[in-house]
Image (cartoon, rainbow, N blue to C red; front, side, top):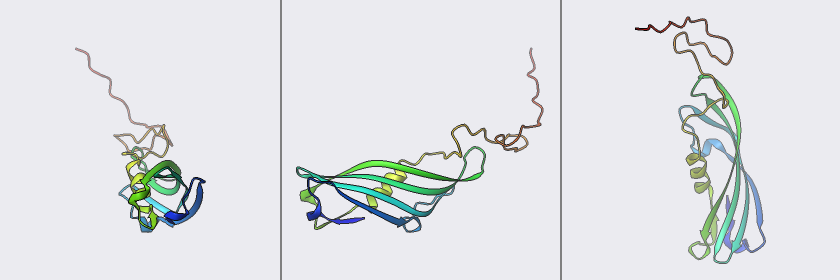
Length: 142
């Protein structure tokens, strides 16, 4: 997303844009960003500073770290960027900062749902879908 610095003033300037997720190179082993990244940004000048309020909505295909099932997630992330106006040129381009913010706030382990039960370590059954038929060995007492 790119805006002319001279257009940013004390009244917030709103811009919306869809960026192709494939061009942002954010995919990893267990996450694939699909479709578009929807950006909704508000640019505002506050003294010598430019404040950018960003809402980035993503659509991603993940492999759950517990149950190994693939699922689709729609995630929206809101954050604020700030820049010193006198250090900017004619244009402010913020795609790189948005990409970094999305990657830095991505969870270390992605889950299909917060209460995912995972898989049985013995038989590999997805415990979210069915009960395990493995027999638990009783503990020996001495």
